[in-house]
Amino acid sequence: MNDKYERQMKKGVLDMLVLKLLETEPKYGHQIIQEMKEKSEEIFLLKDGTLYPILYRLEDDGMVVSRWSEAEGKQVPRKYYVITENGREALNQMESIWKRISSGILSIMED
Image (tube, rainbow, N blue to C red; front, side):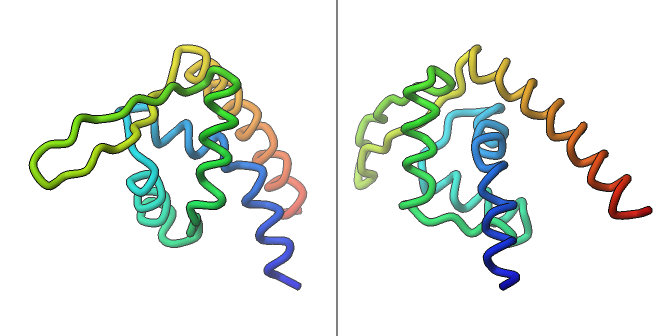
């Protein structure tokens, strides 16, 4: 039963977290998955099937753009995702909403 609630709670913040990881530099899918895992101390263990629909949706919404890298040596071309100005604005709004929500949750839970 705990797993069900944990999945639901995590699902609501994934767009925000992906945008946050793209805030400083372009990243490719596997890199996002690894950083999400490491920075969350393994709370967020995304699979390709979870991440890519998020990236495609963010791209459709104009929050990220993608571009392919050139193959160099043995390295294969990779599709990098870059946050747009619209994505930065949306991230700022999401962070503000998240702070309000988490503050309200803590007020209730610590009462």
